[in-house]
Length: 310
Image (cartoon, rainbow, N blue to C red; front, side):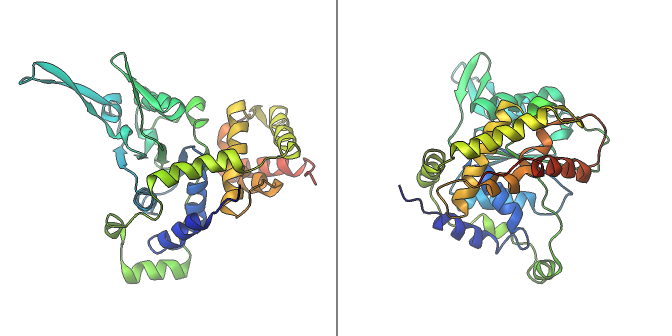
């Protein structure tokens, strides 16, 4: 089957009008989305995280919800709750923001562990259980969570089980000088995004996700290469815990999406290597307290020591 990535590339070009200087972050976000995963962005406030989430949702014609995390946020603020309707004499369930297609969870590490755990079932199983009743979530379903790397007071670090639910962990970074000049000239364009016409409709979005999963080929050589990386992480001198099986599946899924967006129906080693700092670093436990850049360098060194398949 011939795969066509033209619409995704058109989507990227269209959104870069509103997300100047953020092409790499946008591509990584779409890789996470089209591989049916979730995305964690660790970066400073004011760099366009919300704008990017809104842009992706609107350009795909999908429902968008936002949760602003605080220490007093309750699980029901995310999932919803039943409220008694006096006129009907019965309880009615009111859906929370988790029932949207794309959910921005802002400053996730400001929520308590109990509230954070409300996202685990949703992210892993695409469903939530409330008052002993299970509700299926919308398809597609994508959580884009953010956390601030500097403001640690009053925060609750995400546990390993939650971190492993995120397909990629990225940062946006500052725009280059020319892009920031354009932003200053034109001002914020976030409001314009709300009236953006969909570039890919919901049905086609679901079909693209399925096509990437079913029709982008991963050879046994590439699978063996991924297993070599996984095994090396489990026996590395600086790591106390390596990549899980869920992590190995995430590496494979994101490599497929990367290949597709690059215009190929097959995965090459570079699809795995180029994403390694985003797919692996947050999934492993280090024996010592290394800074972010050192952790990335350790994983990069691990990858470089593994023979690349021909």
